[in-house]
Each structure stands twice: as C-alpha cells, then as structure tokens.
Amino acid sequence: MKYETIIGFYGNPGSGKSTICNSLIGKGVFQSGVSIGTGLTKQAQYYLLGKDLIVDTPGMADVLAKDTTVKEIEKSLKKGGNYKIVFVITLDSGRIKLQDFNTLNYILESINTEFNYGLLINQVSKSSLAKMNSDNIQACLQTLKKKPFHILSIKKIKSLDEKENQMLDESSVQDIQSFLSTLPGVNLLQDQVKSINITDFNRKLMELETLVFELMKSIKEDREREEILLQLNENSQRLLEQEIKANRDLDSQVKSLNEKVQSLLKPNHQPQRRCTIQ
Image (cartoon, rainbow, N blue to C red; front, side, top):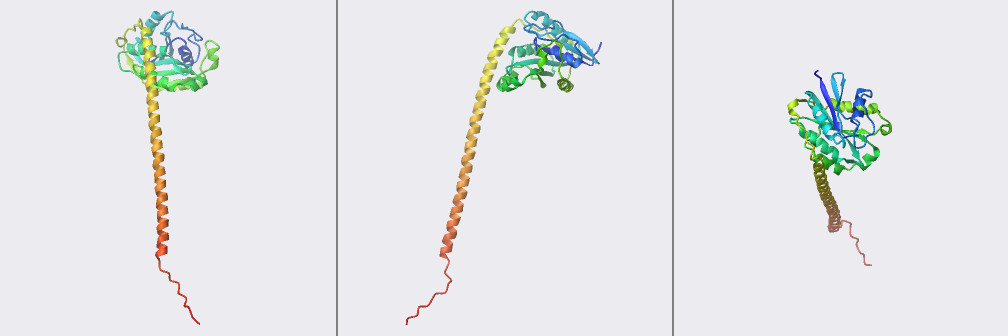
C-alpha cells in the first residue's frame, strides 16, 4: 500500500514518542507511560491516519534490547515512500542528554541521501527553562552529523508523569501538526538506508562527552572575549562622548571670553562732562 506520507518518530526510551503519536491520532493506539532504561515499545508500530502512516519506533538505547530495536528502526526506514523524520528528546536539568544525540547521529548516518528532519524537545518544564544551558545546547547542536530543519519545544504536562496512555493538550497537538506541515519530506528508498552498527555505542558516547566539554569551553571563552571587546567599545564610546562634551564646553567658554573682550574694546560713546573752574 502506498502512503501519502510516512511520519516516523525516533528517539530513546522514555522520550515520549508513543504519547506524541497517540495525541496526533486522537486516541491511545500505542502503549505509553513511565519507563526507566528500557522502553515500553519493543517493536515499530504503525497506524494509518487518513493517508499518512504514523510510525512509533522503539528507543535505540534500550539497555535490554538494543539489537532488536536497531533492526526495528532499520525496518521502519525501509518501507519506501515520502518520509517525514522526527527525533524526540527530553532535557535533563536544562541540558541535552548526550545519549539522545548519540542515538540521533547513528540514525542520521544510516540514511544515505539528502534529507531534512525535525527535532522535538518534549516535556519542557518551567524549571528546565530556568536552568536552560544555552552553551550546552549550542555545543550539542555542533556535534550533530546534520542540523535539524525545525526545532520545537513541547511544554511539560504534569499528568503524563502519573498515568499511562495520557495525551498532550490541544495546543501542543496543534503546535506539532503545524511543525509537521512545514517539515519537508524525502522520498526514501530501501537501498538508501544502511545497517546501523551500534557495537561502538559506548565509545562514541564517551567521545561525544569529551567533544561537548571542549566545545562548551570554547564557546564560553569566545563569549568572554566578546564581552571584553564590548566593554572596551563601551568605554571608548563613553570617553569619546566625554571628550566631545569637554570640547563643546571649552568652545562655549572661549566664545564667551571673546565676546567680553570685544565689548571692552568698543569705544565709549557717552558724552564727556566739562569741568568748570570757578
């Protein structure tokens, strides 16, 4: 069967892929809820929504079933057709979890053609926003094999932490639908998807941690240099303004002095009194 669009959601266990899929569908088709380390989704699941195929995939970093989940992810990418690819991640105290971006890079490398994808940052709380580390996010984005076409943050729904098979609120669903409508698709053929080899997953994760640390250090140093230059420029501007003001004051004083001197040099036109000697 040919689908108008295959919308695939990818990420690690607990990122909220199933909840997002259920919310788009409008009912609890895929099991969702709390998972620690291992995901509730063990196989790629599919649902035909109108002419579009919604694909909910297992988390690649599932500690109990990595090999199985990798095969399911590969299979979900090899159905052939117009794909819209979305990666779902969550933040940890305002920081990107490097395991998520490590997973993302593996999948990006498996697709051997030009394509765009979207990045959903799911369950963003007020506390996460307050702790948002822009240096960390900027550094992590630099480690990606390919930058996302769109990034969308989804606000945290407290009830999702407490119950299974919950759904996002209407405004979040509308945001995701708008996000998907502007995300370009790619005609992905089976032979354009390579096998994913995760035998070096932990080694690459350690390399990624080192790289992000160095990038954050470099970003901080660049920002500090920019702040110093900005301060120097502000100081120079302030000194220039003071010098201009001092020159204006001096010009005003010189002008006033010249006027006084000129007034003293003018002849006195008052008539002289005659002295009479008696």
